[in-house]
Image (cartoon, rainbow, N blue to C red; front, top):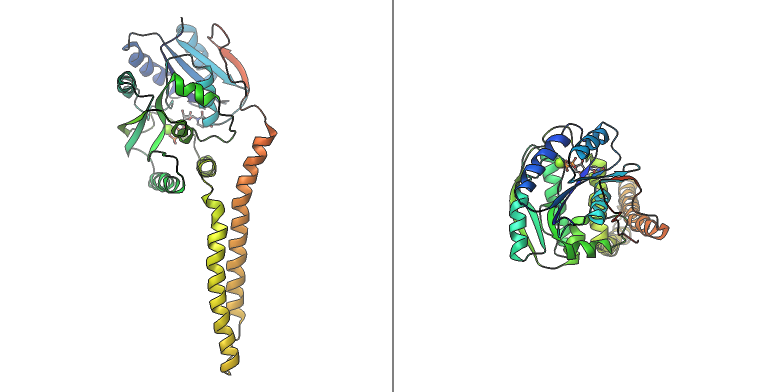
Length: 318
Ligand code: UDP
Ligand code: MG
């Protein structure tokens, strides 16, 4: 018999939180009185996460573990979790207990009311740096402005999706994935539950600046062409400014005896224009890099071991 609920938990170097996280999830899911599975995706952890997951799964038949061959990243780990999940409703939650597991029960209630996607919207974030909160807020707003897809503000990957949505997600072959956007893109009946994001239970964030930047560029490039239009609009603006300046320079030359000595204006224009050009080239490069990734058509992830599954229920064909 398959489970009614699947809880997908991506984990990367979470030895300090994994056991606590398992216990809280178990307590919450036991309260549903339905069959459920806790699906941990170990994203190539280098600490003792793997051993701990082994230990947990030996003592609990509801626990399933997917071991990646290396670190593929948070978004890919969630993807694998969705591929392997068998529940009628699939919940995605971080391992660090920043998203309170107790909220899952409320999500389930909404699902039973008929919603296909119930996402957690953060009204407050505790224990995160001012820098992180500010950049995150700015990012969600920029993204929303740049795309026609209705991607909700301040919403991470903590959400419940119905089996139908999960099946549609499995058909998406995209390599540089921005899951929260893709779930919006898929559509169906969606609703939000507001919550306060707690501090991390223990350990440090596994999202250093570099990974955060990658995720935000993935989000922007997969849902908007607007950055490409920067060249058109920025270029047009600079041309107008350049033309105006040309008229001034010519007028000075023709009608006055005081021609500008010139070095300062030349160097300023030179730096401004070449900076802008290189920036635009970079933007185009980001898109080309992603096209290249798509054409290589490598599998999204490699599973070293899948533990606790009765049948191999991996269904991704792409
Ligand atoms: N994570 C992952 N692979 C990675 C980075 C993170 O599976 O390469 C997991 C991590 O273990 C956690 C979740 O993704 O369960 C979110 O990461 P984290 O809490 O560090 O991000 P933050 O909340 O600081 O943005
Ligand atoms: Mg976290």
